[in-house]
Structure formats: structure tokens, C-alpha cells
Amino acid sequence: MATKKQATPDIAELSVEEKLRLLYKLQLFDSELDDIRILRGELPLEVEDLEDEIQGLVTRIDNFNEKLANIDNNIAEYKNKIKESEKLKAKYDEQLHDVRNNREYESLSKEVEFQELEIQLSNKKIKEAKEEISLLTEQVEVAKKELEVKKEELLLKKKELNSIEKETEKEEKELLKKSEEIAKNIEPRLLAAYKRIRLNARNGLAVVRVERDACGGCFNKVPPQRQVDIHSHKKIIVCEHCGRLLIDRPLSHNILEELGGKFKEILLKEQEEEKRMLEAKAKKGRRTTRTTKVKK
Ligand SMILES: [Zn+2]
Image (cartoon, rainbow, N blue to C red; front, side, top):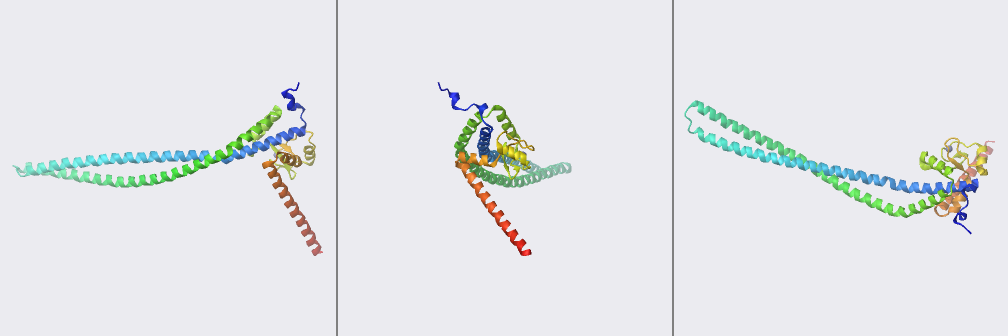
């Protein structure tokens, strides 16, 4: 009787080439996932920053308004004080009319003078408070304008984030599913190594190609014999400098072709570039032979 287990080949029985294929596919899907996350990554932080800034501005405006209310209260108090002093002054002025001796006159005159000084002082304080009010009002206006700008910015960022999330959500789910499916077929030890290398590597690359005789991850040279070993698919070979898993270009191209879609596009672009480079090289070669001929 056919069981479910027979549908997928036994992981332990996979050839090295099969293992490399799985690892490279896993890397391709995981890199796509990384790209989506990077694309989306900055925006939530920017939205958060803007929200913090807006909260800060609101608090600042509240504080200004509180200060303004306090100053208004102070002005009312000074005005009351002035009224009191005017009342007292009027009373003393009145009494000055019926003084009986010099001493009484002097004492009352001093009281009048004192109340006049009090009125002056209160008026000075009111003037200062009004200056403070105009300064604070200006600051409130500036903060309010800034708040409006930030609110508008936030609205735009949120819109952008929403559309990117909507756009990428489906793609991310599909990629994640594929990545998980492939990971299931890789032996745990190899998968753990892949994850460990990916975590430590910049760009999240654990499986890289040999590009122009060098490791595609750290760009250190890969010795010729090692390259032969990589091509032969007899063993999984790692870069002796960075520890990344290495794969040869033909196998990678074969996998890109097999995956199709977006990956096929990557492949076509690469082949196009390769062609251009070869042509440029050939042209340069012809030119140098010509100039040497001329020299002769
Ligand atoms: Zn390397």
C-alpha cells in the first residue's frame, strides 16, 4: 500500500546535487523574503517616529497653554491689586484734606506714595506678562504649524505602509510557504548550518555562487582544485574564508531556469550581462592586437 512517506524521497538518500539544489532554492526564496522585509522595514519605524514627534508637539502645546492660563490669572491678580491700591490711595487722599498736624500729613503722604508705587509695580508686572504672552503665543503658533505638517506626513507614510503591506502580503505568504516546504526536505544538520551561516552573514546569504573564481559572499579567491570539487557535486564545499556554502554557476543557472518566473528573469539578465562582457572583452582584445601591429 502506498504511504504518504513514499511520495517524498528519503532525505538521507538525496544526492549531494539534490541537497545543493534544495539549499540554493531555499536561499533564493529566503532572499526574496529578505527583500520584502527590507522594503517594508523602514516604514513602520518612520511611522513610529512621526507618532512620537506628534505626541511631543501636542505636549509642548499643552504646556504653553497651561503657562498662558497661569499668566492670565496673574494679570487678573495684578489688576485687582491695582484696584485695591487705587481705593486706598483715594481714601488717603481724602484724609489728607483734614489733617491736624504735620506728622499726620507726612504719614498719610507716605501711604499715598506707597500705593502709587504699588500701582506702578503692578503695571510693570502686567506689561511683562503681556510680553511673555505674545512670545508664548508665537511659540504656540509655530508648534501648531509644525504639528499640522507632521500630521500630514504621518498620513502619507501610513498610506504608503498600508499599500506596501497589501502588495507584499500575498507574495510574502507564498514565499514563506515555499521556503518551509523546501526546508522540510533538508536534513536537520544541514538546515541548522544554513540558518546559522545566514544569521551571521551580512545580506543573509548562506549559499553563494562562485563568481569569477571568487566566493560570491566574501569575494575571496576560491582555489582551482576547490572549484573543481564544487563543480563535481560530490561533496558540499564551504568557503574557507567565510564558511558559506558554495555552488557552481551552471547548477545555479539550471535552478533559476527550473524555478522560472522572477528567477528566470534574473537568469536572463545575467546571461545578457555575460554576453555583453564577453563582447567587450573580444573588442578590447582586437583593439590591442591592432595597436601592437601598428607599433611594429
Ligand atoms: Zn567566502
